[in-house]
Every structure is written in C-alpha cells, then in structure tokens.
Amino acid sequence: MSDHQKQAFDFMGFRKIASAISIILVVASIAIIGIRGLNFGMDFTGGTSVELEYTQAPELDEIRTTLTEAGYDQFVVQNFGADTLVLVRLSESGNDQLAQEVTATLAATGNDLELVGSEFVGSQVGDELKEDSGLGLLLALVVVLIYVGMRFQFKFGIASVIPLAHDVIIILGIFALFQWTFDLTVLAALLAVIGYSLNDTIVVADRIRENFRKMRVGEPWEIINESIHQTIARTINTSGTTLVVLLALYFLGGEAINNFALALIIGVVVGTYSSIYVSANLLMVMSVSREDLMVPAKEGVEGSEETEEPPEWLNRM
Image 1 (spheres, rainbow, N blue to C red):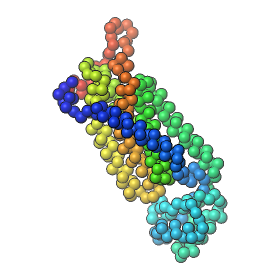
Image 2 (cartoon, helix red, strand yellow):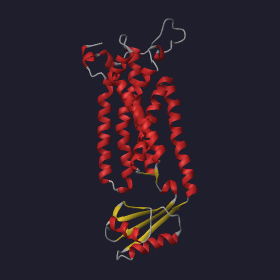
Image 3 (cartoon, one colour):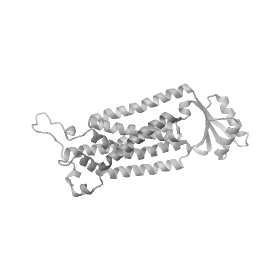
Image 4 (cartoon, helix red, strand yellow):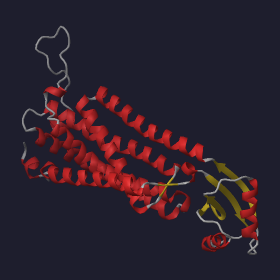
C-alpha cells in the first residue's frame, strides 16, 4: 500500500465500535416500536379531512382552541399551499354534515371562511393501507437483494439490503420515540430513503469490487478502507447538498410536509453512516475475497482470469 494509504484515516479500525452502535440503535428502535407503537395518522387510522379557505391568514392556535372548546378531541390543524388555506384532520369518521359542522364552528368566531372540500377515510381502508405499506417496504428490500445479488455478487446483495433495513428501522424507532405522526408522506419518505441509501451503498460497493479485482496486495480490510477513501468525498458532497435542500424544506415548507422532510433528514444522515460502516462491516463479516469477485474466464481462452483493463484512476496511484 502507498504511504498515503497508510497515513489515511482508518475507517475499518472503528468497525467494531460502529457495529456495537448499530446493534444498540436497531434493538432499541425495535423495542420502542413494540412498546410505544407508531402514531399513525388519519391515512392509516381513518377519519375526516376538512379543507378550509380563509379570506385572511388565521392563527392556527386559535383554530385549535376553538375546536377543543367545541368538544373535538383528536385533530390536527395545519396550513397547506398558502397561509389562508387550512387543513383540519379529525379522528372522527363522518360525512358532509361533519365537515359543515366544523366550518360553522370556526365561522362562529367571526372569521370569514368557506369549505373547499372534505374527505373521509374508513378504518377498514386504513388497516388495508397499513398492510399494503408494510408489504411494499418488504418487496422493495427483496427486489434490491435480487438486483444487487445479480449485478454484483450475493454477499454484496446481503450487504446492501441489511443497511437499508437498518435505516428504516431506526427512522421508525425515532418516530415511535417522539410520537411524531406517521402518515403517507412519511411512508413516501421511507421509500425515498431506501433509494437514496441504496445509491450511496452501490457506489461504495462498486469501488470495493474494482479494487478487489485490481489491487494485487493488501488485506481485505485495507482494500475496503481504500475504497471508502476514494468515494468519501462524493458521499459527503451528495449528503451535504441533499441536507441543505431538506432543511430548507423542513423550515420553509410548512406543517403539511414537516414530517416528510424530517424523515428524509434522518434517513440521509443514517443512510450515509450505514453505506460507510454497516455495508462494509457486513462484507468483512462474510469474508469477501478476491475469489468472490473474480471475472470468469472466457471460453476458449486458456489461463484467463480477468479480461478488464485497470481503470484510469488506478494507473495514477
């Protein structure tokens, strides 16, 4: 290995500490989900959504106080699209009459508003949505396992899917801990996190595969370490720019997408960590070797083990 490689930060030197942290976080998340459960939104539990338009931007706290005094128990009040547009989500399932009652209750305080629309979700639809969303996440992980296993090697498939499950479980654990509302926007964020984290993991995995084939000296941990160093700048730049956008979305996007942005922010941070440590740790545990990644010999070519030319970046090392 070169002097630069010897002096570089030893990522794999902290793999045992990282493994312990990951195990603790995952076990704690599963325990919290089991004890506290997720705070499912109306999309999953059923209820009524009432859309109102005010002539002047109202105070949301005043709307909440009015509804509480009127006897409504579980509800969410938030802006959507503009300051004058208000969305009221009620845990009660009803019909047009319930939407009219909510509108009349708020209009009685002297505010000029009108009912834009209302939606009703039954509890049966919510239960089906829970099952379908869980199956959707599971199917996404299975498809990733099959794809990466075929594209790279089965050990890389395992080392790509487990970090994705690791990221999703930790996000769900944090949402269960703080009882943040879990609705369809958060589910969409989880699927986006799977795609984001997978992309980051694939970049690192591809470099690891190249280096195992091309580097003639070095232990597996040294080759993995060097591969991480060669991709870390790209990882940090991508995560950093993504976080800037997500933070702007969280602080400026309004309450309607706060939890969506929050889930993505957690996912980007955890996903960046898992693509560096969880995936690489799993490859070490499964004892990935040059033999696992050897290019098959072409038929009719004797003694041929590799046919690919070394990449240009390696010739400059």
